[in-house]
Image 1 (cartoon, one colour):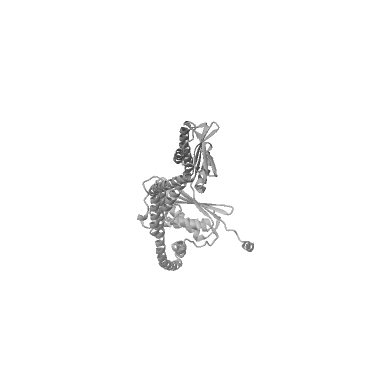
Image 2 (spheres, rainbow, N blue to C red; image 1 turned 90 degrees about the vertical axis):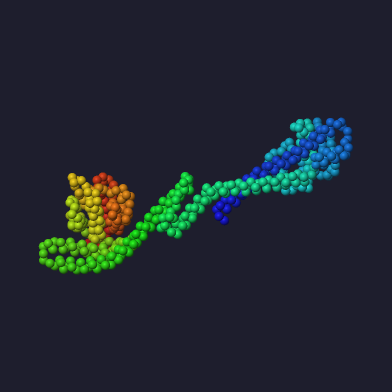
Length: 471
């Protein structure tokens, strides 16, 4: 059963329940009115007859009076005296008596259901005052079958009217709610089903309705969610395509780098001062390129190789980064190394080189993307200090800083780049490598000029066996 059908039947049920709550007091009131009408008719006849002296009425007149009131006997009581106005076929036993001058709401309801359920073959006595005169009372003896029949007819009419009202009310409620609620909900459900079958189709994004209510707000949130999901799917597909392309390139690149590595080894054997100066740097660069090429697929699987941690000299590593970046660019950039010559960190040398290289390289590209004023010094500062077992490394530049969009998507691949043609992979890779070392990397928001990244790296706890071996 659909939700709309359930609403229709529930509305009919609730209206019927409301009608039952109205029916109970109304049927009790109908019974009291029916008895009061009989008393009033009998009282009018009794007063007229009583005014005609005290003579005995002929039986034919008595029968007419009894027939008009539908009773077995009519008694008029005045000032303590009683007079039989009319009587015929008096029953031997009267089973119930009712005083209409002392009827309570609860008593009327109880008497009504008693007549409904058990009446029809009983003789009852009913009495009450005449015209609100306490000194004059009229008393009737009658069968309750006509009363029960009248109540059944009333109940049947009320039931049929209740059913009609319930159907009309339920139909109006159904059509109103179906238009205001169920139709929009059905539209949202059908859209969600269509979107789930083809989430990449822009035509399946729901268009929010013009109405300003909760449903239109839900449609707006659904449209925003579907739009973001489509963007995410496009990015994921782009990443998958990129991963496949990188895998293909990586296969051939490793062979090329291996050949270059062999030639560099031979080049290092040449006895030339200039060659001997640059050959070691060239060899280290090619070695790192070969290592990166072997770990590309690991990053494509969202995992970097576990760091091979050992104590390395941070100042020496920073000098290598500075020298490589200096050779790659012709920009007049002042590099400042504020690192103690004896400061050592426990980290993977190649991975920490990649972290610092990406940060410094981004700073250099920021200077090129937004050239500074000629009077402004282009400076990149690498500083570090140790506090206990934690080393804090800072990479600061005096460039234009990060735009708002880049700050919102910081460290997100393909979204956190500060340049329009950038990929944002540099910061994403740096963050992953730092986290693999158990550290953290963050943007220093307190810097107003340029950008500053702060890296915190903890030393790895030394196993007890290693400590004893050293001792």
